[in-house]
Every structure is written in C-alpha cells, then in structure tokens.
Length: 567
Ligand code: ADP
View 1 (cartoon, protein in one colour):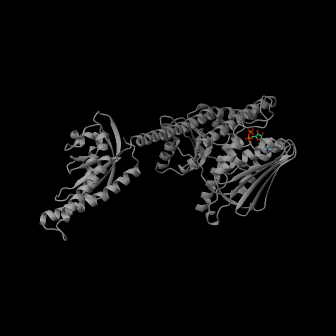
View 2: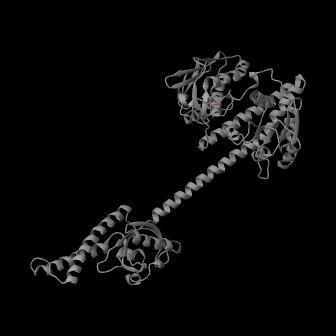
C-alpha cells in the first residue's frame, strides 16, 4: 500500500480522463437512444452488438478502476462516498460496506476536514483537476498522509456533479520533509548559539584584557626605567593573547559561514602603503627593511576593509616573523582586469612538501615544544578564506632557505562603481602635531576598570564625565553639554548603547556631538555595523592611548570640516 509515485498518480489521472470521455460518450449515446427511442442508422441487428461493446468497455473500466495502484474515491457533492476502489478501501483498513454511501469526513483528521471540503468545492466550482495534501485516519485509528488529486465527473442523466479523487500515500515523504525541516532548524539554532557564544567569549576576554593592556601602558609611562620593561612584557603578553583570540574568533566565524562582508570601493594602493608604514616599526625592531612600491597611485577594488586589513596583517606580519635578515618588499601592480599584491621576503623559506599544507588550519612547519615562532597556525587559513570570499586568489612560491613570495589577486572595480572610495580611519602618525581640543566628554561604561583606564588616559587632555548606567547617562546629558560621547554597547538590563544613542540624539535643543561605540563585542564587521546604527566612530576593546587619540583626532577633523562648511 502507498507505493505509487507522483508520476503514477498523473498517469492514472490521465487514463482516468480518457476513460471518463469514453464512458461519457457511451453514456450519452445510450441516453440519447433511450430518450428519443430511435434506432441508430444502419441495420437493427447492430444494436445488440453496440450494447455488448458498451458493456465490455464498462467492465474494462471497472477492472482498471478496482485494480489501479492508487486509491480511488468517488464523492457526491455532500462528500458522501459514492464509490471506492480496492486500494482506497485497503488504505483505510476497512471494508467496502463501511465506506460506501457513508460520509468520508470521519476518515480525515479534524485539522484537515475543512481543507477537504474546500478542495471538493473548488473542484466543482472550477471544473478543473485540483490537488491537496490531507492527513487520513485508518479504521484502526492510525493516521497517514496522502496527496489527493481530484476531478469533476460528468454524469449522464443527472445534474449532480461527482468528484473522483485519486490518493497516494505520502507519509514517508512527509516524514522525510519534517525531519529535514527539523534538522535545518537545529542547524540554524546551533549557528545562532555559536554566534552568541563567540560574541560572549569575545566580550568576556576583551573586557579584562582592556584593563591588562591599558594599565600596562599607563605603567610603562609612569614607572621608573628599571620596572618599565616589566610593564612592556605585560602589554606584549596581552597583545599576543588578543591576536590569538582574534584568530580563533575569525576562524570560527569563517568555518560557520558566518562572516559577513561589507564590500566597498577601496583604493588598494593607499591601504597597502598605510599598512606597510604601520608595520615598518616592527620590521625595524627586527633589523629588516620593509619597502613599498606601486606602479600607480590609485587602484580600485570592491573589498571589505577589515578583511583586507586582516589579510595584510597576516601576510606582511608573517614575512617579518619568518625573516631574520634582509628585507620584506611589498608591491601593488595592476594587470589586465586584476590588481596584484605581492609580499616577497628573504626569510627562512618553506620546504616543498609543506607548501601543499600551508593553508590548512593549525598547520605549522615548525611544531613541538621547541618551536621558535609564535602563532597558532590559523593566519594563512583565515587569509585564504577571506581572499576567496572577496573573489580573489592567493598563491605562494618559496625556496627553502632563501625566502617566500605570497601573491594575492583581486578583480578590479568597474569604472562606474568607483565613485565612493572608503578611506582608512585617520592615524595619528598622519599629523603628529595634533593638539587635543578642549572637549567635554561623556563616557558611559559600567565596568569600573575600563572607566578608570579611560579617565587615566584622557584626563590630562580633556574633561571626562564618567557614568555607569543608561538612566544616569540620560540625566547627565540633559544637564550638560558634551562634544563627545563614548558609549559602551552592553549596558545591562537589556538596554544597549545604541538605544541610548538614539535617545540622546532625539533630545531637543542639544548641540551636535560625536558618538563613539565602545565595545568588547568586537568582531571584524562590527565597525560598519555600528556606523550604520548612527555612531560616528567605533572603538573596540581592548584599546590603547593611541587608539583613543585617533578617535579624538577624527572627531576634531569632522568638527573642523563642519565649521568650514558653515563659513
Ligand atoms: P602561524 O604563523 O601562526 O604559525 P600561519 O597560518 O600564518 O600560522 O602560517 C602557517 C605556517 O606557514 C607557519 O607556521 C610557517 O611555518 C609557514 N609560513 C607562513 N608564512 C611564511 C613565510 N613568509 N615564510 C616562511 N614560512 C611561512
């Protein structure tokens, strides 16, 4: 029972239509003969022969109907069963006498009875074949799912329209669909859980790290020389931990296909040059030269800025890490419809047999307790995935003992899309003479250590008001005037810094202010997320004094631009 497929059902419906025509024609012929009591043209002896043929086709039709591999029911308009075939009766585990001339509704689950009535009505109204899925109840109380296809049945000598329905058992298919839906829901739930877990882990590690790295920086400046080195070690340990955390979080997000890109037109030359400038300090500490060359000033590509930064950090960072003497040379070159970034070093090189494993997670050429290099072996895995996500490609050439060259290629941006170019946030090194304006700053932060740190780092430069809750922030903002507000995102009690920002912006008669999202929920795409929520800037935790200074510098640039516009 129930082993007929969907195509069986269609075949049977077509056969049924053909038979119906035959039957109707025969019926009509017979009816017209009966009504008018006339003899058909030809010899009178032909009549018994046609009756015989008619009887034969009727009995053939009955045979087909009875032994069809699908269940058949013929319903009157009031859904009383007018006829049923063997398979149909069998499917209900009942006897013909219990079904014929009885209502069909008791065999339908209460939830689907209305649907069935509508279905029959619809068939009669439209005169077309219609389909629906129903849950039926067998005589023993068990249930099963069927697909029902019904068509109106013309009857000779009667105004009443019958409906003939073919049914196939779709219980197995239905259960498979239900299982698939349940599995999909489970997978979605696991992804949601994973997301929350990553965000929480990021928050829980970054918040105390902000204190460790920040206070180490304060101590580095304030301690006498002999203790300064200890503070430096604490800060570098904190930064290493932060680097590992970022790698693991990025990897987990990429693995869960959860990494959202915010692609925007970028001048690659400017980005790579800035990155080289930033990392040249590190290269210098290792006695290396880091050079940058490009054959043009502007080369545009559609990329996610934070992902590009991550790629450059990993590749240039590795080139410096694995080179003991000589140089790291970075070039940007345009070729046909692609831009090529090459990072060439004169470092330790990579053995041939390791080259094929280089992008696999946690793979390192030097492993074990005595490995001489830092790192968890995720940098290149993340790099390759990010490059591919942005429609690029990466390749490596290396000679063991001589050096390596990593090449990344991205498609160039089409001319008409290149109007809006995203620039890097300003770095303080761009203008070393920056003098912090006499700003008044409101800091809303519920973590005491972070409060103290911000105050300590900023107090010499500007007036800072520290607030630890949503409501107190509203009161303070109402009673004062602030040029800058630094809003922690997680303020507890289900209220966020973003909600607070919207409230502050809606307050009447308040001068414009520069709003900064301040959060330990720092994942690569968060910057763009907070900017679209209405913030002017974003400061992830942990942060350094120089990060805070960059924020102040960007705020003052925006304010100056505003003043110039008004003049
Ligand atoms: P990590 O540097 O954290 O170990 P990566 O994924 O960035 O992890 O790199 C994987 C491995 O590839 C490294 O452990 C190193 O053996 C090798 N490698 C990567 N870049 C270079 C390079 N520029 N020179 C030599 N070896 C490299």
